[in-house]
Structure formats: C-alpha cells, structure tokens
Image (cartoon, rainbow, N blue to C red; front, top):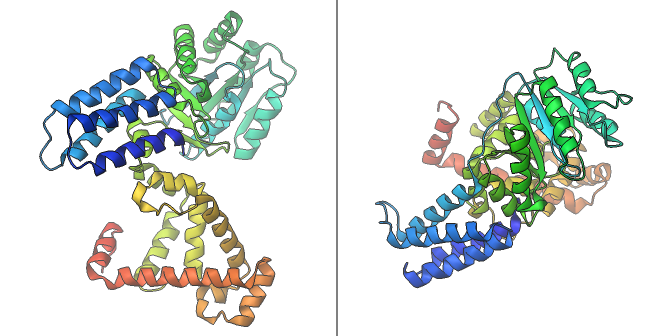
Length: 440
C-alpha cells in the first residue's frame, strides 16, 4: 500500500470516530491529536499539519450536520475533505500527440519513469518513442534501450554523441511517426546552473508540451523545494513522485509539492513498468482511509480484460454453467491487473477479512494456474470427472502434491456454490443482469 503506515494510522483514527458514543469537544480533540501524530510521522510540514487539524477540529465542532448522515459520518467527511486539500488536486496528462520532457537530479527514477509513462500511454492506444538525451550518466543509454525493449516502445539514441542538445535535435528528426515522444534528460548530483541551462536549451530545441519533474518521494518535504526550483527555472507542467510504495516520507513529498504551483501527474507504486498511477487526490485519500478506489480498479480491469471474452464467460455463468476453464480465465484476469495486494488496496476496507494474506493468496493463485495447465480440456470443462487417478496424474504433471489439486477442486466447488446461490436469488440475479445489460 502507498504510504502504508500513514494509512494504518488514519484508519485507526476513523475506527475511533466510528466507535464514539457521542461527538463532543473532548472526543474530537483526541481524534485530532491522533491525526496530527499520523501526519507528522509521514513528514508533513508542522505548520500545514496544525492548519489542517485546526480546520478539522473547528469544522467538526461548529458545522451543522447535514440531513441524511450521522455526526460520526460528518466528522469522517470533514477529515476526507481536509486531506484532499492537503494533497492538492493534481492534473491529467492529455492523451494525444505530444512531446514529454523528463527532468530531475540523479537517482530520482527518471529513466524508469520514462518507461512507466510510455507503458501507461501505450495502454491508451498511443504509439510511443523513448528518446535518450542523457549524455552524462554512464549506462543511461543501455538502461533506456533495455526498458524500451521490455515494453515494446521505439528507442532513439546515440552512445557516441556527448552534446545532449545536438543529440535531441538530431534524434527528433527521426521520430515523426510516433504519437508521443518521451525525452529522458541528464541529471546532476544536485540542482546546478549547468543542468538548468542544459534543460532550457533542450526545451528550446525539443519544444515539449509537457515538462515533468521526476522526484523521489523519500526526500519528503525537500521534494517541494526541488519542485519549486525547477518550476521557476523551466516552467514545469507537472511532477511525478517515485517510490511512493515504500516511502515513510511520502506524505511530506505529496503535501510539499502540492504547496508549490507544480501539480502532481503520476505516482510510482512499484518497480515494474505497469506500477504507475494517475494522481487524483480524491482517489488517493479514499485509499488512505480504506474507502477503496473502485474507479481505478475498474480502469485496471478494462486495460487487461478481453471484454468480448468476459461477456461470453458472464453469459455462461448466468446460464448456470461455471467450469474450471471459467475459473482459470478469471484468475488470469486478476493476475494481469497486478499484485493482489494492490487490488485489495483498491477495495473498501471491509471487502476482505483482516486475516487475508495478499502475498500467500497471490502465490496460491499462481500454483492453481500451474495445476490447471496440467489438466486436459475435458477436465477443465467437466471438473466432476477428476477422480483419484486423474488427481495423481495432474499433481505429477504440475510438480505439486495431490492435496494441492484437491484444494483447488474444493475452492472451485465453493465458488460454483456461491455462483449458484446468487443465480437462485431472483432479485440478485435480476440486478446483476441489469448491470451487465443482459435480458432474462
């Protein structure tokens, strides 16, 4: 989970609010102190923390509770609103023909972010080229070329050219057929005059519509200082915060960047090319508070799902058929969406029991997939034919224990029973069919 420790602390504060017998000044002050501690631990600026928590306390004690909600829900809504303000609004990257220039100092994750942004845009149907303009760092050429190969993006570079401005001018002349060009520029160990001069010259030659600062969220509040300096120098159009998955200072980075005029566009949530998300403060705060983010989950599902195949499977299930083949397809879809832990983060906090271990569940899904790969088509379509001799053969083929195969079959039968239960409930079936636009 992005900012896991902050999220846990805020969720505990929410639980405390939910359990309050009555909302009074003493209970509000106690909850506010918990929120203060959580934000300070996440490296959010002290003055900002005091401003936010004072607002929460003042509003909770003075605002009239709107009709239709209880006082506890009203306090939670105030907390949500104030945190959204702290994190800033962010902005979306336009999904059209453009040039994007990435800037930043060494070690912030520029080259990795170039591949992540390229991958994000590819999934939106755009043809992307990666332009290597880092002539300072040894290995920059090879790293970007390798990443471009991993995601299937075009790569433009020249290992011998040492003048980055000349290099960009020449390479861009070769890239006319691409929708989006991402220019990965050089860095320095700190913000220096020659780096700023180089970025200005590249911007003049490359004419990028987007100038994105890549900054490591582990810098905490210093991320804001860096964003401000780059913004004043070259006019940033956005910021990408990297390493948000493991940063205890991510709250400080987010809030300090939001305090500058630069807006956050993406946050990096892991090491893989797909581990990047649009920053939307309302979604982000929903996840922090355990309210889930079903919109992001749906977008991930749409990116990875063959909608025609999904509809065909849904119709089969609605008609009462649910085979191991259907279960296999569903598991494959879930695994394509990323880590199970990340998927669980996008669901409301009550969607999974506390004892569910995401990593163990992910490993079990992979094992089940291997087992099903050892089955025949007849076994996948008619699981009831799988008896002891077939279990032994399947286990041997998959390199697992027979008990693992039996566990899969028990899970399948439980899933089939659950599907049957929904289908036997006329009201539930009708609501589901309406959502899927099926006729009964």
